[in-house]
Picture (cartoon, rainbow, N blue to C red):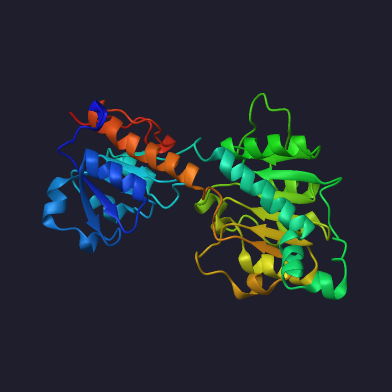
Length: 327
């Protein structure tokens, strides 16, 4: 055990199931307190006195924060933290951290794989082979769609968006983007509105975070701008999409196809999307390799260790960047 991971007299609450590697490190460095879920009604008097940190996949609301008066830090496992009330945490003087960078390349790889799978129907072609149809019926049909000549818009040009853009460059595709604000020094064409981006491209990749500002931002109007040859890919958050509008657009030919790794009510996927023949659907596996999840687990726990030894976070989220450790 390293000096940094010497057992600390600090209780860390871990709601529900958690990454095994992270749990192993938490058990070595802290006193782990388990609770079935992040529910204030499950917080005991002992937890109120002892818990100073939370390690979780998210789902920490204001009521849960308020239920733990000695809480100092919430270490979120994942780059997205929209299910953590970070603003309330900041108001309470509670640090919130996430796990950026370590999953960027993996998610970007998955995005490109999902895009190719969607456009070239590779998932259907493989099933055609496995079912024996190649032997019975001959060659698989020519795919209607191709990457050639496509223009791609990225909604959310953060770390992952930039990594996706670099990969698209290698494919020789035109890239543009929409953010809340223009990224200085970036050569890709910027569109001040999401609608403006959708009008300019035929392929839209959503990497935007969840939350009220992006709730159902991908709606019927945005999808219609992509055109009948349009392709929509979502690797960000399911809440950013009006799933009923997407299902309708796929059914009536408003767009040609969609590839989705995230959904609004996971693991519940709308029947209309499951039954659509022009969808490629994944069970939220964007960063789900052993290599990357271990790196995420390490960063999650490293934030806790740094906070309770050096009294500083490694990767604070913007809302809590000014939160200081208590004396």
